[in-house]
Image (cartoon, rainbow, N blue to C red; front, top):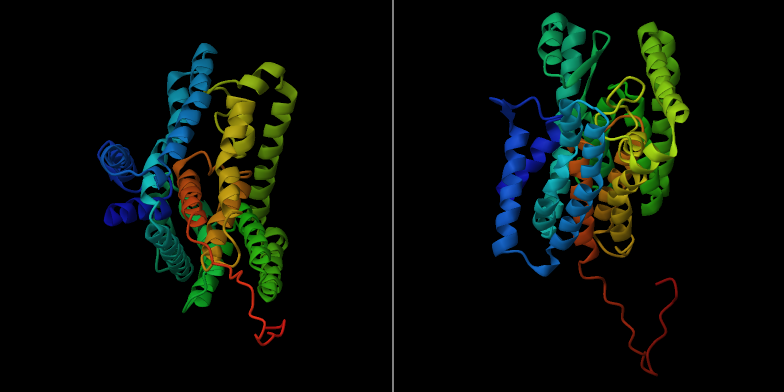
Length: 401
């Protein structure tokens, strides 16, 4: 189980959209997803206990089907192409893996293991990206050949001739949160490496979501000195991303303008075409928003395609995670780990307002991992408070002690 869990999680953390490892007509992610379903079915029948979180997982899967299957029917009845409907539904099918993560993460040891794997994945992605940038800048990597190989995967997009974007770079931000929360030997060094790679992705959404989550977490941990340092780093990153680069590189400025315009046009389209029916029940999968099937803001996507119930459903992981997080006392030694999982989930929700990560396996898988990890952490034994009355001849203890 440990080996299989590690393989599943690492593929999710470093595999981006899953298309880098094709196995004939399928991908490694598809194969592992199918094995997760089989494993959870087997474990539920022969080994599961009442405290494994399976009822919650099955409830979430049932709610997912109850909310999303009507959107399939509405989309087909409205004349949407079956291929478009299937593609949209397929993106969110990773919800079906919730029982596997519920059973696997009932073990506190696997909760700790997942936290370690997040940090390893972030370090691997950071080193690989920085090495690739160095190769492109020095000419060790041929830009034309590099572009041709990466572009055909559909997982990468280029920003000029030296920088590029990979869908899996979301885990640079998530690993930043974990490196900040869980201090250990060399963690500061790796934190700086990951932050450097994160900034050099030139992705405003990543920097904004990571900054918000990191600052909020440091406040929760009451690490006031770190808050000041983090604020300085965030200020430098904001200056570089929002002021320096657009003024120094016209291509970056033009790309930003196009991106901002597209998001504004999507919102304006929804406001102009909104009506009670679609907002309540959804326009269905396969329906278009501003002549596009998908848009960057997942929350607007859910409201338009699935309706109010869909929007509420997609906030469930965050709400449930908050519920379990608040049950972990600050005095426990696993409070920093709980902070890492919860505020990394916050990162995903902030990020998905600008790029669609929550409604596909890249972000959804971590949201599920964090949810069931926090559930396990909230159920661990709490510190015992000594309430016995002091003896009459006991020596008073100074309040400072």
